[in-house]
Length: 465
Figure 1 (cartoon, helix red, strand yellow):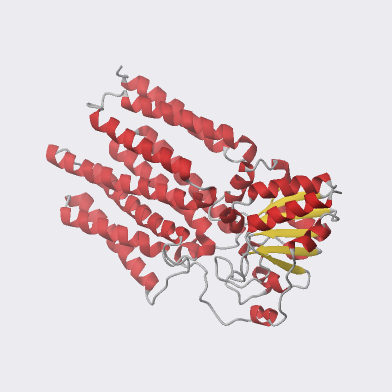
Figure 2: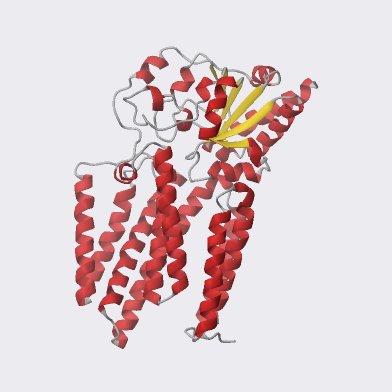
């Protein structure tokens, strides 16, 4: 059945409304599931309306492409671990970017053969190619850093900013020339430079800024989709791309504010492992550290009045969220008040920790954002840090020479005792040593986070009171 243009427009309008409702639903964990359902329904309507439109002449290649993509998507969805979700998001962003590039180039070839090119279309093609290419290689670099295929440290070299600026200006000039003349040489050079620029913009960004990078690339992918919508004359793609682009940009800004950092500082700088001589860190290291056994930790935990748990990427890697749920239930059965503190940039993408805790069915009313939970630490008996690092590092507040100075942190150091679950003494993803290790009220419990928490659970069950 072929839809008329008006019917297709109505279907696209319904899809757009559903996508807006989906974004609204995703603003809070309690409504996120419904938001996802709105998004799925909206995309289903959009796909059906597109396939039923008059612009589709044959379904052979479409069916083959959809079938291959569906098989790959199902396999990836079934096998992906929650800890690897940031890498998956980065990879999906790269697909959107490359799709924008291929659609623009394909449209140029078809329109050139039909002699229907015009200035506005050429400008749209230029925008789609440049934004898409930057999104693709930037996302590939982010994926490689998150996956550990390359170092998460910032990669810097002399004249880096000047080189990026020169390539950016050259890319814009080539885009203008291509839009005005349709030169294949300008198209080729513009595309190559945009691909290179995507990589060189991301490589100097350190691991601690990676959540902002993921959000920023999400915004790029939205604008790439919007540019594709202009190229194809598809209003829904323009709407959806603009929604994703704007929401990603706003989220990036919010996260930068949470880190007390400028978005320009993140995009063009990034903090990492290579800066400066040790100052407060080195002095604190001379004090040594204290370690604690699981049994000793449990002895104090079951008699505590209030415990705040701070999860981080180490919890994600160890898949310890389900064990944490059981630990929470056992402690609450003993009358201990248990809460979870979430930093805006904990993990490797926005909301990473919230997703993992929700997966373990930890109640939403036990999970608090940084600003609302920080005042509670002064009345907290134990802060249990599970695989977090940079987001609890007092150097961000106390050491003006630290690369992370000025970043708001979860103030676990204010609790009466801090138990820090750590696999080793290696610093966090930013590469900055953690002053919290050396405080008098901090004890480290070494080992895999899941094994350690399961040991705590077993010890609590064994006490029987």
